[in-house]
Image (cartoon, rainbow, N blue to C red; front, side, top):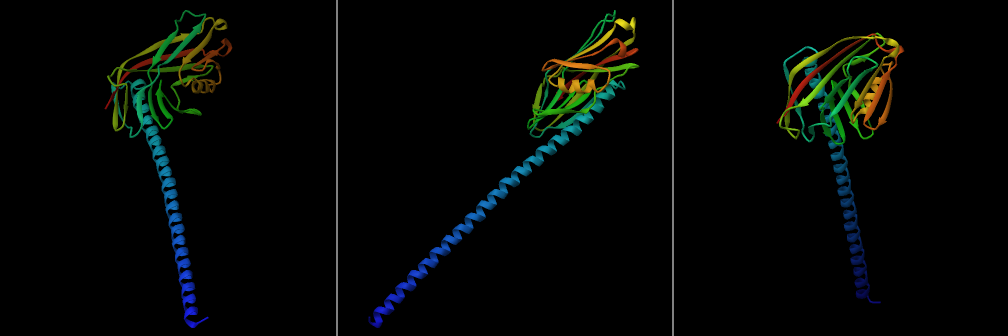
Length: 266
């Protein structure tokens, strides 16, 4: 082998090694770049989801606070006799609408007292599968997996007395639902009607029955059973029927109803 041939082979080997090193560097750079890009995308996706979840939760928290103010304003009307009140609610990506009618029927059996029948048109705030509801003086938080009562209705029943204040809501405006932006709920007191105190006579034959038809009948059932004197059942998914037998029947009943007309103003 001549020196020239050996030099040529050495040069070829060096070129091959250099090419392999260059290819390795390119592949290494590509792998690092792909790793950086995938990591960035993953962080962005996870971060966006967390940001969206945080935003949705904050929206629901704000809705609960707004409905707490709404309930206080409604209480000014039905408990204190205020002529009117207005409440602002920020909807952002949520929807506010008049919900499915709730009916409340209170009957004293074997009595000359006629049944008390009331209908309520609740206000429903909906966002991401969660409903915040104001109905009959109570606030509910409802989801597909269950719900809870955020504010109790003005109904208290014991062996001594039954205090039942029915807040009848009726939408008399032109808007039944709204979404986005800020809306105002304007409520007007259209009259309070107290029902005269009832006396048990004869106590051995009387029974009180409360029948409520509502999409949240299970929550109504939980609350009424918590009073301790009522026994409840759910004949239908949207209905709860509670009764008090004569031995637990309150000696006096204080029942009143306040009709509140409201309008959703956008």
